[in-house]
Length: 351
Ligand SMILES: [Zn+2]
Ligand SMILES: [Zn+2]
Image (tube, rainbow, N blue to C red; front, side):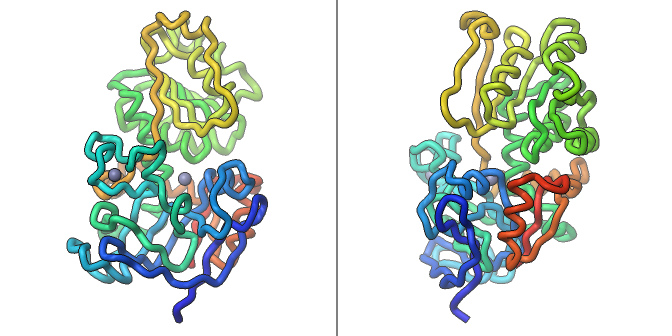
């Protein structure tokens, strides 16, 4: 009774299902019984050893679940409530949190990302949520687990890219890469009022989903030169906002080259190695360009807002859940997801 199944990072190349103790909780924590979770691209980086975490860590940072236990200091929820928590679980009390940068909680870059990073995550039957008072949001009645499964990370991150880019009504926006985060950036750009949304990817199925989520023009980079097409579409002017949703030198540089002078490059990708600026596209530093980066916003108010968007029907992200697995089969799910087989976008995992 006091153990549970959990997906554990063992060593690079190996995440396996193990029996682990059900977590104890402290006064400010909550224990969730996980009902649905998913695998993120970041988890694949962890699996491959490209993003280091300690061996023995339970992975996963996108929980939907039922409150099983509450710490004595957690006063605004009830046992049995169905809730989500963000991938980022800020404390809500430190300087960065109160300064409006709660994803950088504690003052270290990415400090707000704890689940499946610095503490055990939610690809398990149970998960401990720290600072629960600031981090649990009840799921509105009538919304299914799968309807809110993108809120903790993918939707918050993708929308965050559109919001950080300060898209204005009537803007032309280009989004490079249409994986799960890029697709959510597309949906976010539409909600922000962009009236011409150009998306770039090399997978026709992803471009088709992008159209469902609000893309006006799709460019398959295997068939067309994206920058040339964007120049044609904008009459040589460039776009107001370019969103980078992959994390490579090439997509970053393409974003910069697609921008008009004064435009904003909103970067969501996770980069590795060195990133350099092409000075011609950067107007030698005098083009009034803005470059802004965003880590997934978390916390209970952010989750409330995102679920309000889902409940309103203005965005339906359920086409992104393409595959379903039991927690027992999570190793198989990792294999499918990491090799992007069978048109996979996101997998729903149910303990
Ligand atoms: Zn993630
Ligand atoms: Zn904090």
